[in-house]
Length: 171
Image (cartoon, rainbow, N blue to C red; front, side):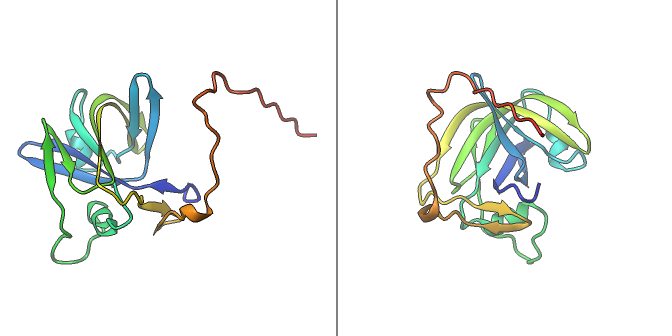
């Protein structure tokens, strides 16, 4: 799966008066109606201890200049002082200030996924950050940046009502 490029997010949940947070790249859209997403924390992670149905959480999409924050919440920070960051509350939900965007969510369900949990969340609100809109990427165990100058136009899927049938036979 290291060959699948992903964005990088920090998931944050309330932990009493504190915030428990972790870096994640296993984040995905699930449904548009209702608006659902999923993320997959390790079962033994500290954040997993605070998850239950209806618990609020945020998915904070990191920008390209937030490598230090990603490294810190991944548990790989080796400096004596953490990088600068700040959590703010949206109701009961902690969100990371200064991100590309933050999705304000609540836990809809939790499913066993081997050594990880598959957490499905209902998205209640999207808060977009102030530019520049350059995401932090993760690919083959390394951070990367998006080069939009070389990007092609993706198909407009808004008008697609059903997937076409594609049958392939090995001969």
